Image 1 (cartoon, rainbow, N blue to C red):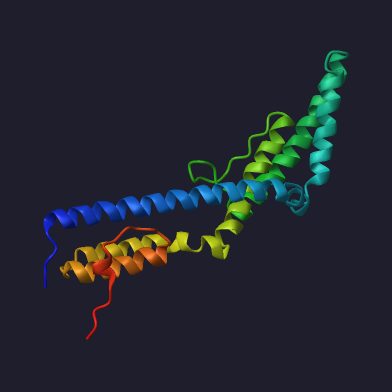
Image 2 (cartoon, helix red, strand yellow):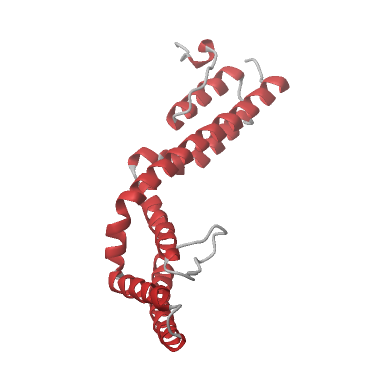
Length: 197
């Protein structure tokens, strides 16, 4: 039984890390692409499902009225600003409630803070929330199931690498792990053959 030499061990350790990192990046890229496409398709239904169409419409109307009459009358502007603010607050409260219920997160993995200053901000906030919902659904697709298994498979590969097994057994097992991970690797053919008894 030929033990693994230190340079082989170092090479295999680097190979494992590199291959798993590349596979993760490919999967994340596919998830992001699929998520964006699905987000674009899901946006209208998503807004309807939230039941905030009336609030959006009301906020849009209030926003448009304010913009239209802003230069005409100061008192009317003040009145419309109050209505707009009330409608905006109603919309923000409802979206914030959905954010808490659905667990939407911001880029720092904290609860999403809904910040709407103008009507133009509404679509951006809802699009970000829709994208999170869509990504959760996309990640559950069978096509991306391997993403959840990658950490476990990499750990198994690392464990067998440092188990003290001979090079042939190590490569044989690593070949199986790489194959089940969907990671192509050019392993020496002699090491991946099953021994005949």
